[in-house]
Every structure is written in C-alpha cells, then in structure tokens.
Amino acid sequence: MSMFSFFKFNDRTDPKIRIAANLSFLACFGAAGWIASLMNFIISELGLTAFDFGFILSVNETAVLFGFIISILLAYISESRLLGILVAMAGTAIILCAFAGFENPILSSVYALSGKYINSFTVNMAIFAFIISLSYEYFEASKESLVKHSTDSADTPVIISKITAYGLLGTASGFFLVTVMGFFSFDYFYYILYAVIGLPMILIGIFSSKKAVASKALKENIEFIVRGKFFNFYILTFFTAIVNIIMIYFGAFFLVDKFHMGLGFIGLIFLLHSALVFFLRSKATEIMKNKGEDLTMKIRYIVSLMFFLVLLFSASGYVPEDSYMKYVLLGLLSLYGTTTLFDNAIKSFISYFATPNEQRSNMVIYDRLIFAAKIVFPVTTGFLWFNFGYYAVFGLGGISAAICLLVSFKIYAAYNDTEDGGTTEEG
Image (tube, rainbow, N blue to C red):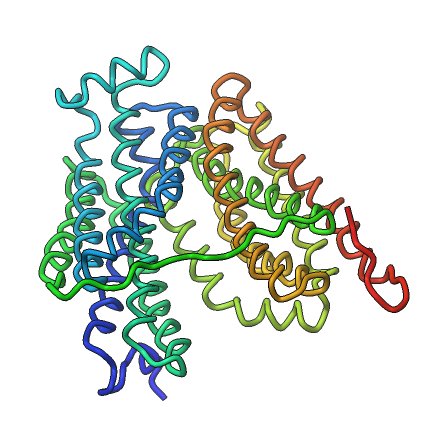
C-alpha cells in the first residue's frame, strides 16, 4: 500500500469533502508558516519585546471567545463556500503581517487607545493575529459541520481522519517552507515569505468558494457539570497548558532573543517537533497502555522540569551568546513535542471517575481551560519577561511543571481508594 493512499478519497465521496481536505491543507500550511516565523519577525524586523510577543499571542487566542458567531454564519452561507472565504481571509492577514512595521491611518484611533505601553507595530500584529486565529477557529467549526452534513454516520470517522491527514501534511509543509527559506538571507525576505504563504491561500480559497443553499447552524448543546472530584483534573489541565505555552513559544523566543538564532533553525525546531509528534503518536499510546497513565504522566512532568532547569542555566551569565548551548536547546525544544503526546492521559483520567454525561461535559471544560490559559498567560509571561527577565519566565514554567508533578501523584491515588468497591471522590 502506498504511503499516500490514506490521502485518497473514493468515488462516492462528496466533492465538497475533497475541497474541504485541500483547504484544510492550506489552512494548516498558513498557520504553521506564520507561527514558525513569528518570533524572528517581531524581533528582527519590528524590534518588539517579550511583552509585545505575549500580548500578540493572547489577542490571537481571544478569537475562540467569538466562536458562537459561526452558528449564525452557517445559517446563511454554506460550509463549502465559507471554508474558502476563511482560508482567503487568513492568507490576506498573513500577507498584511509583512506590512506591520508601518502605521495605518485607519487604525489611528486604536493606536491612541493603546497608549504608550503598546506601540503601533504590536497593535498591527495583534489585529492580524486575531484575524488569522478567528479564520482558523471558524474553519475548524465549518469543516466539522460540513462533514456531518455531507457524509453517512458510518463514514464520518474515516472522512475526518483523512481530512486531518491533509491538515498534518499542510502543517509539515508550512514548517518545511520556513525552515528552508530561513537559511537564506535577501532583501524584502518577509514580504516574499508571507506572499509565498498567503497568496496561494487567497487564490485557491476564492476559487474553492462555492455558492450553495443555506445549511443548518452548527450548535453545541452540552451541559456543564463541574464537581469537586474533578478538581485535580482542572488543575492539571490548566497548568499543563501553561507549561506548553512557555516551553514551546517562549523557549523559541529565548533562542532568538539571547542567541540570535536564525529563522531556519527556529523553523527546524517546529518541523522536528511536528514530525516527532506525527510519527510517535501511536507509540506513545502503546506506552500509556502498557505502562499506565500513572507512570507516563509522572515521567512527562519530570522531564519537563528538567528541561526548564536547562533553560534556566542557559539564561544565566555563565552561558554566553555565542555558546553552542543554543544547539542543545534546539534539540531540547524539538524533543519536547514527544512529552505532549502523553497529555492524553489527562483526558483518560476522567473515564475512571465520570459518567458518560460528565465525560462529555468535562472534555468541553478541558478545552475551555486550555483556551483560558492561552489567553491569560502569554501576556502575563511577556510581562514577567519584560520586567524580571528570563529567570522569572522559566521559573514560572518550572513551578508549573512541579505543580503538575505533585498533582499527578495525587490524581491517580484515588484509583486505589475505594469504598464498597467504588472509587472515592477527590477534591
């Protein structure tokens, strides 16, 4: 069987599904290329600080708060048409990022409101980041709605897996493009890079947009069930998100800020990260099944804590800017992706305590807690970095990893605590 056979659809597949798969490739391609180049762009081209970087990331994540609008949009426009529009919109925002170093007269009132603490370049990037994130969030919801309305229930899991494969291939392609182009230096580099990423998204997005009858709105009707026995689950979810934010994004920002690492190497980190996650995800599931979530979660947080200790040492004056330690950190940040594969153990914890209805509810809460961390902590971390330096940021990461490690010992202890053959509630 060819390794590309998984990307093929049979003749019975609705043509709109094929369009969605191709657009999923483009959406992930654009998101990957943009995020991999973001650190180098805002430091080398715009001269922004860690606080600015954190502010941009936080604004980027606030797009999820407006997800309810997708239900309204899908009541008046078909998913297949909306998918193309969203991809084109994201491509436009990516191209506009190249011009973020210029003040836009249209945004003069926004610049005035931001005051002296947030400069105009940061405002520009935050607005473009919000548009990119909003496009991607709506794209995922529209894609889900399209699959539900265009496939039989029996085929839905296979179709979703195939479209996901297109997205993973798009992510890898975006990281690969940034890595290869990042090792070259020429005039107007980011104008060309963002045009290479954004123009195909605009053109194909527009051409793929099809006029069709209105579809049913995508609705989410899940009862929220919050109980004390899930308290440790909430803590572990929230602080794991903090650990991932600091390690992945601010770890890469640190390499650019202190060691002046080029875009090619930063792109390589994300490329290796995504490749390891892709190829080792089944192996990680096998390890969790054979060794148990208990052990794998503890190892995951011990390794994370050790990684933060290495980052703290690298931030010290003992490690100069031209040190080869930067290549050690490059490997470390690339390998970190393998630890996130074991985060699924957090979700599986719920199955030991919850009824099916509680499981559905708490999976939604799981996502909301991660989004909350992504909104609050990038700007908080940037503030710490700006005022107290590297130590405060990686110290926060180390403390968060330590909290997760402590909770991982407590959260599984309840498995063995039983009363009349049942599990005792935690919290």
